[in-house]
Length: 312
Figure 1 (cartoon, helix red, strand yellow):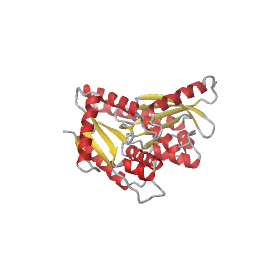
Figure 2 (cartoon, rainbow, N blue to C red):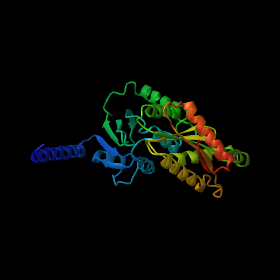
Figure 3 (tube, rainbow, N blue to C red):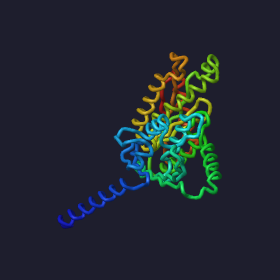
Figure 4 (cartoon, rainbow, N blue to C red):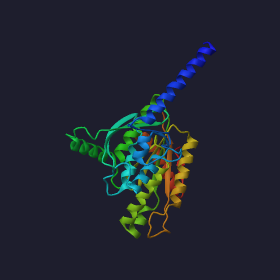
């Protein structure tokens, strides 16, 4: 191609991008772009005003939502435990290439939000004000959405329940089978958890389980997944990582856990966890993958706990 033609094409593309950005800035629709770490990288004025935020390249979606809860701005959260609600919302966020849902804002508006995720994990959020639309059937739709969330969510911690995280594991395994991705699985179990229940009561045990769920979620990216398998056992799915990267994530998670102090009335109480890791192989079933991770977890426990172990 002639260099002059190439230059004209570049100039035209730059002009289109400039006009598109200007129109997005001026649009009454709420528009925002989050990167693969869920950091807000762009937001137009309508989004910034609605969620009281500025894209400084540092604030994450969770940071934004927590600020909104504290200041009474942004989305309306009808839940007795806001942190549990946030954990559930984060568990579902970005797990599909596209999804759409209704949401209420504190200022009384009713919006239709869409989330579009690309292959690199960047997410475009777009919301339209649909307050003026007829609301016939809205209560039924909201009840359906609540039922769907409940079917996917562990009620104590707010993160994915066993069924939902295994569904996500199967989706990632399907990618591995066709050579379209990699998957590392970590099965985690709290150490000596029965002692906490026996000495401090089940309320303290529940607080420790919820704290670990927060540590687990904070250690994962939006493209990853985590869930509670039952009792004090959890699973972490790390997408498109090497063995070294998976190992580093689990090491950081166990370090965070050692430093955690989940009971305000007992600040000296700390706890630990053990982990078994494995990498998915073409042809693996969920049962085979979980079995390898479970064997590795057993070895970590047998070696003294508060450590991780790769499957043989």
